[in-house]
Length: 449
Ligand code: GLC
Image 1: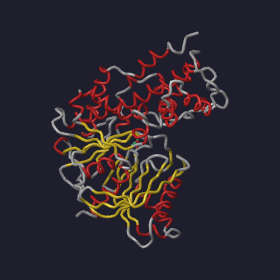
Image 2: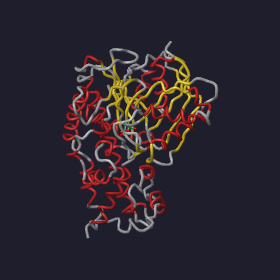
Image 3: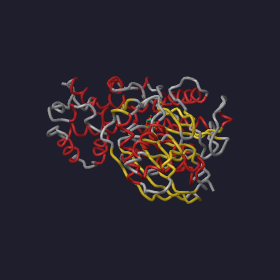
Image 4: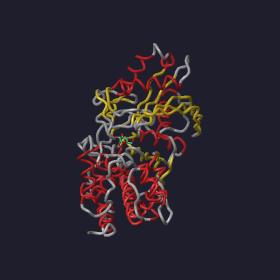
């Protein structure tokens, strides 16, 4: 019988693309950015967001709605100018479902906004909608397709600000606090985190989310784009683009068989880079490796028993993966206990350690692919790395997975070289995307000083 440990070098090779193939992904990524910017068909769509970076002098009080995963957040944000931001209130609603009719999504969200606000005040609301959206203005945009396995009907192809406004109007009778809310801005979460970074640091020109999904935004000088672009609110010479680079498909040659199964079994095919990086998928990749080993008779035998999470698609989650990484004891007692709770039964140290290594390989590849995206984007806007760039990052995976940030940093050093890597500083901003909605509402005209 083949030994489980013998499988490790194979797994390591599968989940560690060579530096040459990463370099070739960087080239393809840049070619896709170019096509996207030119308005050609591309796996990196580059949606204009109709807004530039803020000056840092915007002031006022705004409401931010942040919707992009199962947690919806409403935040009341006060912008004081000079890059100073304070959060007055911050509430979270956990969505009970990710499919249904449009009203099943927007009605509870509108009611939740009402529960947070005071009656008799006017509120400008910035709406972060963290899905691919073809914008038609700073507060208008149609969902092009659901990602992250969301599947509410009647939303694709429709203006999501309008759907939110309709839900707000429907409920003003019973929730009077909603009467005075206007949707002033609509933006992707990556654009939100970019503007939050830029509000206090003018060097910030990229935004990155590594959470349920993954994606980037970038500030581009109009002179770099050959086609006419719509006007920008704020600085007319610049446009922030929601890249939608989670959909990048130049990674087919480095996909493992497990990535291909994951994509084939997903509710929506595509988003190939996102499926290698984001929290929605990492646990499932590990589960598919375990399933493969079991069916080849290489090990993990009995792990898919009746009560085991490994039996169920998406039963093993990225949170579990993070718990596994936290156990640094030589005996991996925590891993054993967790597996027990997940319905696996008693597991020897041998299997525990191969399992932990597998989790690390999958998470490590995710961090390296994030570095690939940052390196490619930075080199696109500044091929000789002449300026200092800052990438503002938000997201639970980036924040919570032990060693993740170091993995991204190591990847940047590998791809750009030690000193050039310092040209792309990665800076974590908690709740950056939601706060950004308020800043965009301010840039959109409600409160510039
Ligand atoms: C998915 C969405 C994208 C979003 C990202 C992070 O990739 O398509 O719009 O920015 O997740 O939430």
